[in-house]
Each structure stands twice: as C-alpha cells, then as structure tokens.
Length: 178
Image (cartoon, rainbow, N blue to C red; front, side, top):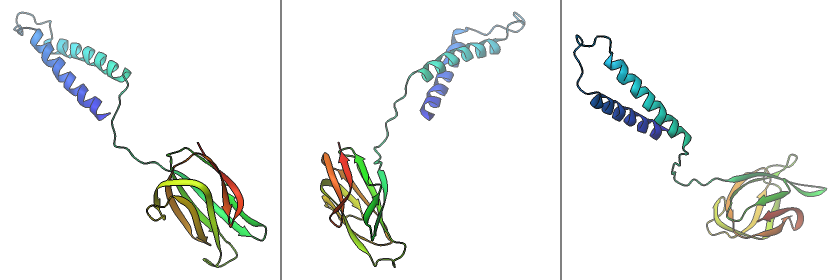
C-alpha cells in the first residue's frame, strides 16, 4: 500500500511539472486579471491524479513477501480412565507437505502430575521436518505422554493414506492425509 502512495506522489509531482511547463509563459496580471493560473494548474493536476489513482486501485497488486511457515494446530486432549483411552479430536485430516503442530496433553484430573503414562502413536504415518518437542530427524509419530503436561510437536506430513491413531495399542481415531 505504501508503494502505491509513493508512486502516486511521484505522479503528482510529474503531472504538476508537465502542467506548468505546458502552460507556457505566465502572462502578466495586468494583461489577463481574470485567469487564475494556479487554480487552473491545480484543477488539471487534480483531474489527472484522480484518473491515475483510479487506474492504480483497479489493478491488482502483487507484493512479494518472504515465505512464512504456517501451522495447522491441533489441541489434542487424551484421557485414560477405567473405560479406556479416548482422544479429542479423534479424527484428524491433513494434506501432504502441510506443516502440523500437535499440542497434545494426557489429561488427568484425579491423579498426580506425571503419575500416568500412555503411548500415543500413528503407525504408518511418515513425518518430515520434525521440530518442537521432537528430536531432529524423527520420521514417525510415537509419543510417550505423561499426565498433566501439554507438549507441542511440529512436523510435515510426508505420505498419503488413512492411518489408525492408537493409544496404548488400541484404536482411538483416524489420521487421513491426502
């Protein structure tokens, strides 16, 4: 947007210079007192600037920017009680190459922090660009969660398919990548 204003200001200056140059010598006020040269130039410049400004606003502007990695973040709550292990959300969808962030927590209201653990895994799902709480080079998702801690795991989805989400070996959801 700033670039448009800079272009607009330079155009105004150019148009004003052309209008002044093309109006010829300024007549003496005693010869033509009814002509206001400054008002005439100002009117011409205003009209030309308005035309140019309208044309600039009509054309789409493409601004090159450095690439910024955006995340699709899932806040995943895993619970493990007498009825078994559950996850919210249970089903997750992504596109190949998409940057993902799993902010995952083993929720435990009645047990002390860290006293309960589960293994949250998605066998067959391939990862690239691991980050966050992952160590560098991790290519599969198998997390050992302790109660009470929310940890973020960042990765890119590297393959397509439908994969089971397991909690201690029991299916609790589906991860689909396309």
